[in-house]
Image (cartoon, rainbow, N blue to C red; front, side):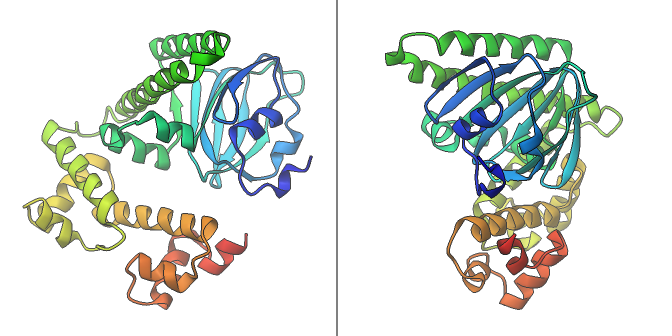
Length: 303
């Protein structure tokens, strides 16, 4: 099978691509796998796009891979989170003869939607995953993840009549736990930076909620400042201090994500996409997209 021609890769396809004797799942909704030896990754060295949520946890050995053209080096204790639309390539799996142990947890987008997870609970963490999906776990976090993996493996062996609902509850718990892992990991990395106050976090979360809802129609700082009853200067200061990024940077990232999704997964014309994202003209949208991605919308769609 030639995986190079795949447009998007679902949980069942990933399960085929990374075979393991310790792999259990629920149709094309979910699977969990433990790799106890180095698999043949040769066919994964070609970029492929995933259409699911995937967590890859390295217990032993090393793996070099790229996610959306950014390189990551997985070593023992490293967790890498993939989200739908990510372009992934496995670049290297360490030295010849080196032992490799990985745990994989994979869930389809429809499965995650059916669980009823409330994204507003971890908006900041979700945006952090888009920016940096690699997490270095503490010993306690590793222990917690091991328990989840063991429990998931046990559940998938139980009565098929209830396994889907049982796994839904567990996966929901895992999502919130991963958000906690990410928040703690970022806190450890940012110990030398100014501490984010409760007020800052509240304002940042309020801004992100507004930005997620309204970024396609409102691109100016003043709109969000008015909605939050603060001045544009104050909002800009708080968002920058709390997240390390400016208001325009947050808005631009959301716009680029939307644009990429529409270009890849819709039949809309570029003019229609430009209009949907409230750009003043198609040419303005072209320049904006190329400045942020290095490609024109036409080039990105043709890739």
